[in-house]
Length: 210
Figure 1 (spheres, rainbow, N blue to C red):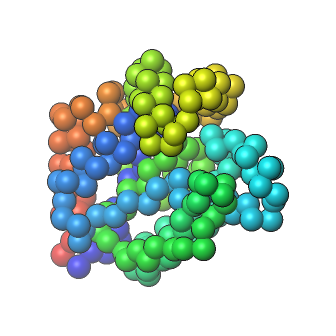
Figure 2: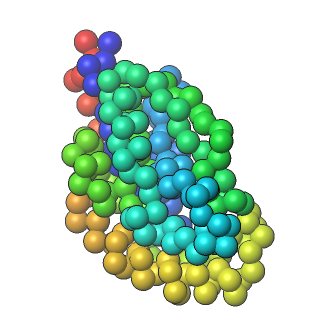
């Protein structure tokens, strides 16, 4: 049995490839041994606000996240207790009534743009990763995603990037790179770094398992 789950933080700017890195790491392990907790699921509940005010939410600011709830859930998982992970409704810009039941596993990956910004979360992590990708690549990825998957116009995506995403990245996301144990350039395409990460995780699991 494992004494304490391994906690890994995977941070980086929007479009940096965090999800690709996380997915690649997960593929190295069985579904029974690893789980992912996305910070995006922990945006604050806004059902007390009129819809028009919700539209003004800055999702790239630390205050947009309910880290208190996230911390409680991580502590529960570390104590081998299941959690009900919240679901965020991006159409209504507030938390959904649905939840996802999550069982404790050997490895917990915390993924999000600001997962390294909160000292309380940092203190729980065994490994801290920052996915570092050039700004031009990140904006292109964001353009493609938001246009194809979210039906947005090119103008709206660029306007949001210039006025919100870029300044928030420079102020809050980029500075967290200094907390990283490992910096992975180019996201999921960096197979060498991902292989090294998987080997390190396996080593920690082996030490904690008896």
